[in-house]
Image (cartoon, rainbow, N blue to C red; front, side):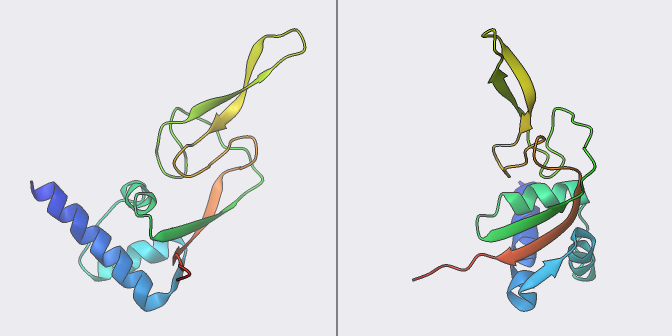
Length: 124
C-alpha cells in the first residue's frame, strides 16, 4: 500500500520539476533535483517511472559504441523483443533487439549517453 503512495509522490515531484525547469538535460541532474526534495531513487527505477509517464518526452543521445545486449532494454529496463529477418534461403535470423516501450533498437542505437527530459506540448 505504501509503495503506491511513494510512486505517486515521485511522479508528482518529477512533473513539478519539469513544470518549473522546462527541460532537464542529464539523468544525474534530474536525480540531484529529486534528492534536493528528499526523494531518493536509483537511476534504473527513475527511468522506469519516467517512461511510464505519458506527459514526458525523453530524448536520448546515443554513442556510436555498440551496447552489450541483455534481455532488458538499456534505456528503460523493459524486456527486449528480438528483431528477425528472412535469409535468402527462407530461414528466419535474429538481427537485433528492440523495445516496445521506449523504441530502443539495437541495430540503430548504441549505448545511451545523455537523456533530455521535457513535458510534451499539446496543441489545443
